[in-house]
Image (cartoon, helix red, strand yellow):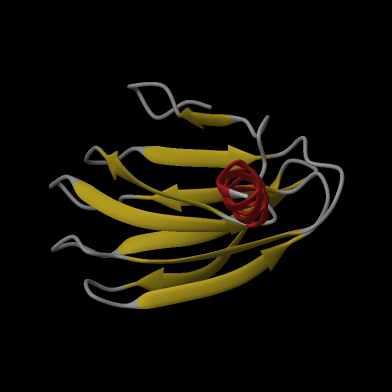
Length: 121
């Protein structure tokens, strides 16, 4: 019986992990953190800005960037991105920024990268 309960707990925890992914990331001054772009379905990106500087949230689709909003320090955000769209978090300040991100559904193979040092992508 204990083995059955333990197995069930493991299965449920794995299933819960497949629903959403959470994590924080640092974004250097003037840098952009890019997420996704290769996903086959839409994703919900939620999170918050625990840093002391604003972070700009953008959508990139077919080479065009669209500014969605500036996320001030302490604020939360929630945006849905379509299949193949890239989520951009841009730090336009001269200080390091941080964002906490939660993706639904979980993307095990999502592309996560930063722009180059000189700002080129």
